[in-house]
Length: 384
Ligand code: NZQ
Ligand code: ZN
Image 1: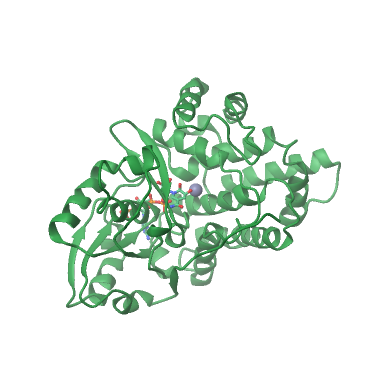
Image 2 (image 1 turned 120 degrees about the vertical axis):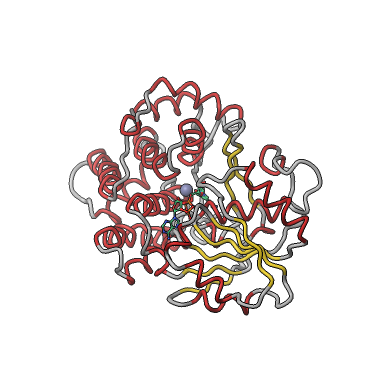
């Protein structure tokens, strides 16, 4: 196992009715800005629950944060926070609202051009405190330090990470997810699954606890995810998927082990170029990445085949082939197609994706830094 430092201070309020308790988590004299997306919270009762939990408090609102949140929209909120002297942010929504709010939090006190926080990885030295009410289990943003933001003008999708943008608290009430459309349920399952794979499916470093935890999350997603699609009001299944998604990317399974993330980096460029949902890009890229890089991932692929999919018969090569096929079939079974052509994207996009990766400093990726432009070309060709 490699050396590591682990730190995660996010307070989780999990379960039915927990939104009612947020008042106690926010300083009594705070001037609050509640941020949200395109309006789902107004039709599923979450907005009312938040408003009533904050009754009598000084609350302004900023709605309209889009999926793959846009810098241009978020800068309007930054201006509002500065003008109004807001000192606490409350993000209510999915990963995009949470990520967008992390950016607002970091941009408000930032001196200079806030896009540099992403484009130049300019250090974040201060941030407005914020809390979150999560309505879409997928990204893990509710318990991590990452945010992914899109500059619409140049179609660039970049990330930043800073411990200063850990949420102070996050509410995870599975009932808020009952209203998710099937597309977003499937997306959430695929995103969480892929987060685990990026941290698990690399090479062995004798870290059996991290491996077993990763495998538990994968198996739970395989067992519980489909229940949430079949019966949207299955509270227990929703609760299990929600906790899986948080555990998949809160840093715990990443400690002491190598990490890949090539699938995500390629996926971000596909979203920037073609507007695909984040999880759709992962469903396209992950199975091909496993296939193209099977030599490097051989031992872990065999372990994954046996422990996650109970594939124990056949030659090593056959077991690996089957495990990759099961992964693809699982994504398809939760309603997320796995081919570029399923989204009307042709292989002629490949040079543009490679160029974008190079522009953004990702000319070599993966746990062994051997995913270069030739490997990306193979991966995307196989995803046609
Ligand atoms: O905008 P509203 O009206 O709220 O609707 C949203 C949106 O249209 C809807 N939705 C959310 N909760 C709902 C709901 N609809 C009905 N009922 C509910 N309870 O779902 C749509 C998608 O929302 P979005 O927040 O975009 O989805 P997700 O949570 O998948 O977030 C995706 C974003 O997170 C980034 C992605 O790149 C993408 O920009 N990621 C963030 C990460 C992180 N912070 O660590 C890691 C991930 O790998 C990922 O890159
Ligand atoms: Zn993701």
